[in-house]
Amino acid sequence: MSTAEPALIPSVPGLTVDPRTVRRKVFWRILPLVFVLYIIAYLDRVNVGAAKLEMAGALNFSEDVIGWGIGLFFAGYLVLEIPGALIVEHWSARKWFARILVTWGVCSMATAFVRQPWQFYLARILLGLAEAGFFPGIIVYFTHWFPRAERARALAGLVLGIPVCMALGSEVSAWLLQVHWFQFAGWQWVFLLEGLPAVLFGVAVPFLLTDRPRQAKWLTPAERDWLETTLEAERQQATTMGGATLRTALRQPTVWLLALGILVTNLGGYVLAVWLPTAVDTFLKETRPTSTHADALMWSGLIFACGLAGVLVSGQVADRTGQHKWSCVTGQVLTGVCLAASVIPGQSWSAMFAWLCGAGFFAVSWCSPFWVLPTLTLTASVAAVAVAFINIAANLAGFIGSPVVGHMKTAGATDRDWFLLVAACYIGGGLIVALLRVPRLPSGAPKAAPRNADRSPQA
Image (cartoon, rainbow, N blue to C red):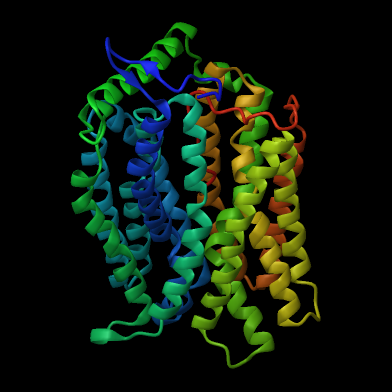
């Protein structure tokens, strides 16, 4: 809502509602739980990067096998992404999320028992299928609770879950790799204990989430009426404005630039999220031969933690200057520069770590500004369809990137080689986004909220 909105708005005859109170209740009731669920989802997607430090040797898996296993997650994920969103719209979000959480938790835990490459591939495909409907479902679920002007802020909160997940997940995984309870290896406990929260929350979600405002006992009748009326008015407005088809969206050069830009960037981004502990382990052993896998994960966690500051700073800068495109491009290009600088020969570990922290800071900073760009460069109806297409390109990158790196390493490439490839992807993605023609928002103007669909960077 705009700041000019009156404090009290009539809802039903004789009653008034304070929109700020309703927003506050909804944010605190919905966002914290969804934020935790998103962290769990992202952790179960990428914890294979930590587990592989011991898993590959224990099972005699080549880097090629690991790379394909990581990438195949996205094969399953892409298949059920759209059906998952439709189920939330037409059925029940809490029941659907409960099903998703339990099944993906079981699939993640089952990875602890793989012994053959085909079992690893199957486990990753099933994990992707199980998790596929979750994030698209969140997008739809937010439309049931947050008016259009609030939706971008709600989704921006989820972006913070990526660096939080990567930082905390690395530290937890570092500890788990060192335990050997009940004759299970540390890498097995990574999957077992990090998959368990999904199952537990799956059991609890039906009692914690509310499907629609009209069912929210924690809102007053007047507040429920006001929120339902507000959301329905926006839906009716969208209907009268008409929709756009995928064919219409694909005729826009801007859509292709955005899709290609995030595809190239995420080719590096997903690789970095999963393979960074492997590279850090190699770099550490070059300068500190006595370092362990747990040490590599602890250092990786610190690098990922820098991303939290990057997300916060980039969002503030983009909003205050109105330069969302250049905030995005700056984050992409500087990530690549820092990654390339980190592998300059002859550096100490301290110097490499400093460059990696810089890369960690910028690696996620581009995400929030990027997802504002469709709303600044496309009409509302086209943007709604285009965002879905762009998000498919973003996830397709996950399917491609890790198998390429796995093949490179199996063929004899060093970690420095694929680091340079990732750096090139970030820089290349930034250069593509720089080609966009975006109207500049006045300095200090409020950020344009995505009108129909907002997306996380790496959903």
